[in-house]
Structure formats: structure tokens, C-alpha cells
Image (cartoon, rainbow, N blue to C red):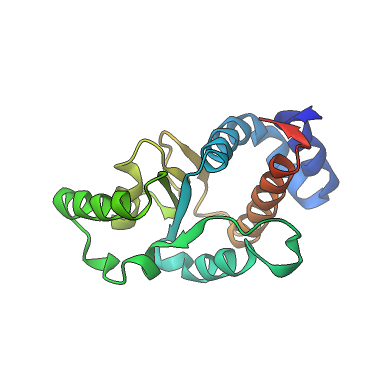
Length: 180
């Protein structure tokens, strides 16, 4: 077994496209993902959502995270839009707190928001309000987030690459291939 940092480096280097941009960013990536995978292994669920510009990626992510050919247990990823279809009405601190109350009642073992999108989106405020959130923020640096550049012409490709690394990291942790 190797640590997630070294495992990630090997995984990144095997993907020639990813290695050019992600190898230098693994120091930012690895501790954040390791802490969130630990929370999941302790029973917490991921409440996943994206801003409106990345709705396509939200569907892609949720369709692929528990694919049949993964040969692993089904993972606790839930769509925030499916859990609360009126999510677009959540815009105040009070409405965010009401949403969090509902989720706390529904997920007694805990949950963490997993948000991908612009840092200035109203949806980002939901994730930023929680200490356990995991975010891939576009055009904003924040705690518990991985920064992405919105002007990058390869942003969509990078999102898919990050999904593949994220998905592989979870499998490696589940099958004791890595130390978190």
C-alpha cells in the first residue's frame, strides 16, 4: 500500500494529457480529496450539485460514479436537485439553514456538499456555508476547494479528467490500495 499522494502522482503521470497540468496541482488536490474520502468511509454522504452552466457535468458525474462495471459497492452520492427540486429558490442564509436542517434529518450519519461551478453562483453559497463541503470552484479560491480557471478552453476536458481521478481515488481507498 502506498500513500494517496504518491498513488495520485503515478495515476496522473499515466494520463499524458492530465500530467501536464495536474502534476503540479496534486499538493492542492490530495489532502482535500483524502479528507473527504475519509468522511465518506465513516458514513457521510455526498450531496452533489453544479451551477447551471455545468448541469451537463452534474448529469455525467451522477450517471458515472456508480456505473455497473465499477465492481465496487454503490457509493452514497445524491443529487441535491433530486432531493430538493426547488433548489433555485434557496437564496438566503435562512433558506440555506432550512435546507441543511432537512438534510441533517435525512442523513443521520452526516453529509457533505460537493459543488462544482462558479464561486459567485448562488449555489456556491450553499456549499460555502458548510465546513465539510468539497468544491471545485471556477474563478475563485476558497477553503475546501480546488481552483479551476473559467477562461481555460479545456475546462470541460479537465472536469472529466478530475472525475476520473476522483473516481479512481475512491476505488483505491475502498480496496486498500492507498493510505489516506
